[in-house]
Length: 203
Length: 203
DNA sequence: TTTCAAATTAACCAACTAGTCAACTAATCC
DNA sequence: GGATTAGTTGACTAGTTGGTTAATTTGAAA
Image (cartoon, rainbow over all chains, first blue to last red; front, side, top):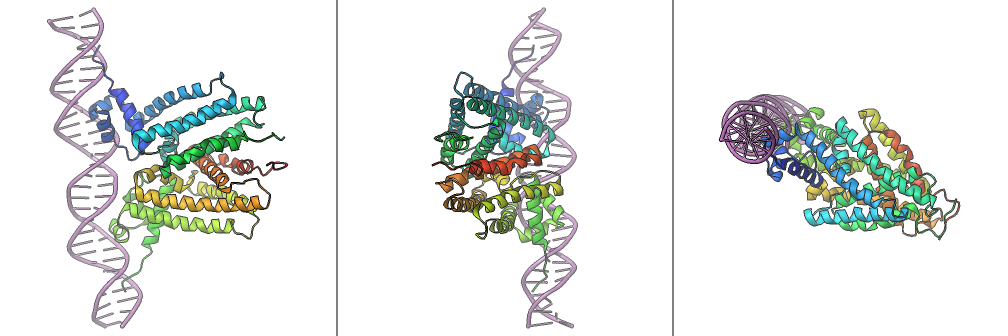
C-alpha cells in the first residue's frame, strides 16, 4: 500500500552527521534536507519537528554504538580485555571520523548534551538514559576485573564514573583541539586510573 | 572627549552569562542587548560582531577565573593543598551558579569549545590557549607534590592531563544531568587519581 | 560656554529560521 | 487496471537572525 522510501533513514543519518560535526543549533532543517537529498515537505512527512528528528537520530546512533559495546564488553572476553577493546575502539572511531570529516568529533551525546540538554527536558532525559546505560558497561567490567583480582576497585561504580568522566573529557579536548594525537594517551590514562600496571595491589 | 558608558561591560557580562547558561548558537544579539539593556546600534558601536563579543567575553571571564587560580595555586600553599583548594572552588562555583540560575552550568570554555570551537579557527585558538594555561597550574602543583614525595607522579604533565580531563568530564556530566550532587565525588576522584590516600607510594 | 568626539537610538534590511499545505506522483494490493 | 495509500514537491508563511545607518543626544575637556 503506497510507495516505499528510504528518505527516513537518509534524514536520520544526515542529522546525526551534522549534529556530530557541528552542533544542533547550527544545523538547520534546510541543511539536513540538502544533505539527505529530501525536500522539506518530505521531512515533515516523516518527522514532526527538528527536535523529533534529533531525538530519533540519537536513538538510531545509540543503537549502532550499543552493538559495538555489546561486542567489546562481551562476557566471552576477560574483563580487562573488554576495557582495552573499548578504549581502543573509542580511538579508532575518532580516527575513522577524522578521515571522513577532517575533524575530531568527540562523543555526539556529550556534545549535544552540553549544548541543548540543559535547556530541553526531553532531550536531557534521553541523553541521560544513554549515558547511564553506557556507564553500566564500564561498571560491570570493572567489577569483574576486581573479582578476578586484576584490578583494585572495591567500589566499581565509583571507578567507572572516574574512568567515564576521564574518557569523555579527553574526547572533548580532542574535539576542541581538533587533534587526534591527544587520544594517544587514552589507553595509558585508563591503565593509570585502573592501576593496571601496578606491581602489586594494595588494600 | 565624548561621553562615557559602561555599556561595554554590561554587554560582556550579559554575553558570558547567556553563553554559560545556554549556548553560543541559541544566544541571539537581541537577547544579549535585552539582558544588557543596550540597543543594538550601541552593540555594534562597541563590538564589530557577535563573534567578537563572544571572544571578548571569554577573555573577560578568563581574567576573572585566572585570579582565583592564582590564589588557589599560590606557592604559599603546600602543593596538595593547592589542588584541594582548586577542586573545592570548582564545586563551590557551580553551587553559586546553581543558586543564581537554577542550573548546573559546567565549564564555559569547555561548553563553548565543543560547540563552536571546531567550526571557527579563531575561537578554537583562543579557547585552546586558555585551556593550556589552565593545565599548567595543575601540572606545576603536581610536579611540586611529587618533588615533596606526597604524590607519585614521575610525569607531572601526564597526570595533570588525566586530572584535567576527569574534572572537565565530570563538570560536563553535572551539566547534562543538571545535578549538583554529581560534583560531590569531584574531590574523592581527584584523590583517587593522584593516589593521595594510598598507604605507601610504590615505584 | 562652546566644542566635538563618543555614545545612543529607532528604523531598516536581506537572509534565514522552523514549519505548513494543497496539489501531485507512484507503488502496492485487490 | 483501478482504487488506495504512502511519499513527493515547491510555493508559502510569519517570525527571527546578524548586521547597518543616519540622525541625535550627551558629557568631558578647552
